[in-house]
Image (cartoon, rainbow, N blue to C red; front, top):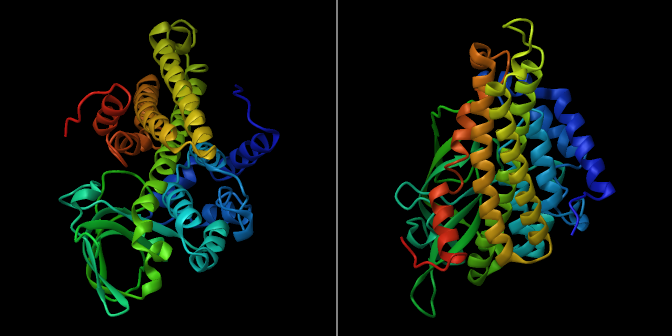
Length: 387
């Protein structure tokens, strides 16, 4: 067992860190407050190959895995630029397409996802069902050779930036009559697809939307994988990468907050010429937060390694644990940093309070801490299902 990155992964980490610091948190905040997107950073990251590190080389990617994409997510977040669409487009959509798309779908979409010229967002959550795919109300039904999709989705990230939405719907299995999940590539300009922006108390350049699908007509080749049998495995293929990269983004955000706080507390002098960081009441909470972030990083590394090794069941456990640990650690780190900076911590200039909403959301989405505890209790501890 080794905790060392390969030389190539080390180079990737250094290069992404340098890119992120050239833009920095002030860029992220300015874009968010202006209602704009991080277009320049996304385009440059794509041009340098960072958005496609996990995409097979034959489709224009770097041929790496979720380990490499987690590095990209973490290092941009550690520079103060936590980009949510890294989770949605390269992690979920690209993984699902690479694993379960038809060859035509891969050729059509993966090169654009790799170079950043195309974005595909993901729509599973619904107002009534949440992300419980057993109770989804969005239904796809056949109409000749076409499909018609109807339903509603909520908290869908980045629809205004995307070319397609990967929609999870339910279809009737002709052999059993039961409903089963299926995934569809829906153009964001499709007739019958409308959206409504959600006002969120989170400072982010990426927006959240309600989606309404009113008999959206799609050709047969919009069905991901070309078969209804692809639906369930394709859906699960995207969940572990989602959890791992969300966790990596949280760990990076925690690192950023701790770095900002320690720079401040190592130089700020108030009482008798000593730095405030020399007082244990200040330094111990920061040290505790640093420990929690580092523990989360270890679980993220384990989960990514298991996933890239094809050990999906084990990666599912570790991915959920990583997401839980990183969500808690990031929230702790940002809150502790704000407290250490005092009044300065609440200013835009010092750049930590600007992350409070995002890290709080990280304990809820894409899966809540309570549902992760349910998962661990059932699948690790052998307890009866509680929900």
